[in-house]
Image 1: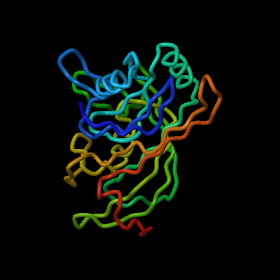
Image 2: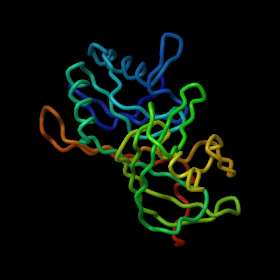
Image 3: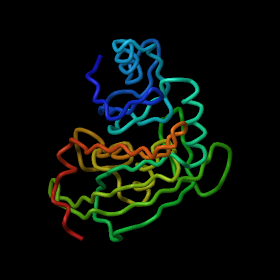
Image 4: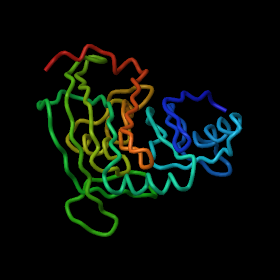
Length: 224
């Protein structure tokens, strides 16, 4: 079992840091973060149930929530569908963004066979609307190239959404070869920094944050 970094826990939910390179949910042959959480809960004397309520790509790290019961998983699913589950990311983009703030909207199609998402022009079967807002934290120089750190609020949750929406505008995430980055890095520079929502049972406002541990997020992003 990987060492868990628990950020929040009650009898319904648990939030942890998902490490880069770890699957959110696996199968009979592949271990995942959900398996680690199940083992952790069993060691505490709980039943060990773990339900995935949202996903992070294997190549993404950061804050992630899981439900401990079917009832909470159902409640959280409804909350997410109704737009009450808010996710904030940090990303480092190749290039220097001109705008300090912005909103992106696209039609996306995910090809499951290739595990790649594309921006398309027309609605058809499998095409979904994708929206996000961003704020730039400034630009810096990395490997003799300009890079920009952005804080992203997802308004929809599509596969590879942040990666493809910025890449389609010629700002691929650093380290993201799949979507055209020419700047090599040990990880894709994407991090789930914050999740907030109103607890379905208690009504309490829950906000969990964690700062990224990759050095690329800590450059001097002071240039605009």
